[in-house]
Image 1 (cartoon, rainbow, N blue to C red):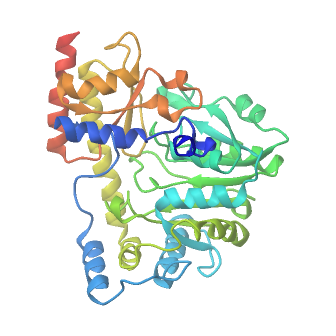
Image 2 (tube, one colour):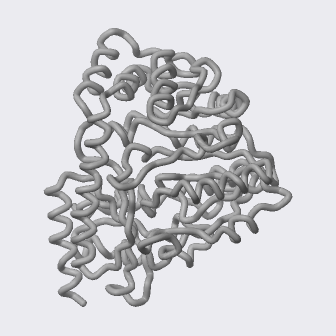
Image 3 (cartoon, rainbow, N blue to C red):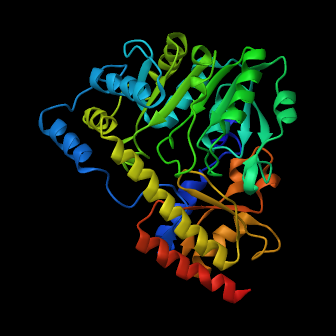
Length: 397
């Protein structure tokens, strides 16, 4: 029995169950409104849903090709050309994956060696640290802080970024638009990051799943569009956030053929393939008109504003965001001890709302102990009900 008790891979010691599973279970148990995990509560466009139904009925229910079906690989390549002017070969530079999470896992497991270092901005999506650990590598965090960019937005110290690169650094892992802060890295910031990557000859992996959820007035710049970056950058995205189909888990990785091949080599031993009838449906979605994509961003911006106003009224300090599903708040005006984990675990019983503590997104958890993330990707009436419940916090102070 000792072997059973000690069966967990030591690389994963300390990770445990993800915070999203814990908080979603808490929402289910208490009947609270779940503003923790980032999934929409409405279906995506009918054209996409109908295409999936048609694919099922027409027999596309067996294993798809290992790279993904040709129609989706072509649609991804066309999307990158249409929106960003990037030219990709669908046969060698596009790989379909089980969501962006598998694409990230395939990329890191396929390209990192034991002892390598990965420069990554924190806070970061929680799977990054786990997969880096599984690869035997080490994350080297560069802290994003509110107030270092314009108008109180999150920014980073360029000197900290440069100092993070050492002789063992192999990769820079970037996420923009950024979860959990809602930051969209500016062109100037990306230019600096690119210079660091080129000077140190680093591989770059960039997670861009929120690429179409950038609020009006801001703009997403893929780092692969900058000079000399396409040849060293693997870009990852998915259809889940864009088409409200997070449960379908259809993602992709695009970039230089050697980086795609390395990702595919690891990915084929994870799921191998997935989502056969959903792949043609996402291909349909990627071909929707420009009006769909602009309306999507405008709608999410309105929801973000609606929630941010309510969070401010409840007494939180709300940090500005330029995209994604999320608002980050400082809880200390309401909870002076700044214990975000305890605050989130108690919040459902206090007022019937679930949020996520940001400390799980940091290597040094103390940096995020007082921060909490709320998701705005819900129906307006659900956001309004959550805001009404959160207003009780202001009364309790």
